[in-house]
Length: 344
Image (cartoon, rainbow, N blue to C red; front, side, top):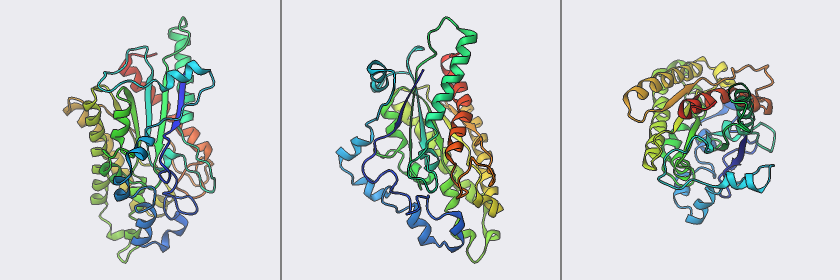
């Protein structure tokens, strides 16, 4: 069975405050023609929930609050104790019958933001449910004598508006960085990173500027985004090494499509180059690095304006879409776990 423990209990102002009044990651694509540099940076880079200077001055008490996990489970107190029993620092990966810790990290697409709706709908619960289904089916075929498949603990945190470049700059930051997650869960099995959309969206002022899309250096822009994401993965794996976790894998999900990319083909071209680069990087890095355990997977839901899995802003998913995302990501997560633990 899986135990889903939800998002991190963030300090006041960290979660959701990065959204504008409509709740979007900066201006919507419908309003993109009116953007300028100050508007875009004010929406996605300088918002109250994600200001680098402010984060560096937060009190220790506020930072510690981030690492408190809310645990929910409907199978009684004993199961809840299993979920919150954290492994201690400097331990190796868990034994074959220990829980598998999975963490989803990213921006508003991990947060589960839905346009015009107050409550987020993250893909984590759907990932949990689908892993239950996959492991239960495998157990029934390969090991019917088992009472239940391996235990899973799925957690997530998403920072609306945060680009990959900021995730890299803040990777060691206690209250938002990926290293805080790795250090807090030193037996973490898989860290799923979904980022890059906001880096792409931040090009809107350049695309809409005097030179137009033709003036954009697509190769240069793609290289900048790719460098941020690949360095984020490498830095996270280095953090895992520090706590003695030599087996943790990161799963890089590709940048999804969007209305913005449909409207401006140069943006779609940059996203495609970044995704291609991520795929190539994972193969090369895994061969050359002694602790290279990076897996790449294309974003599993193609953008289609008429598809009900996408929200009306052309950037975020609907509740149906987030559920589908969890279902589509689950087989790849199981494949990684199977390689690590020889699971079902």
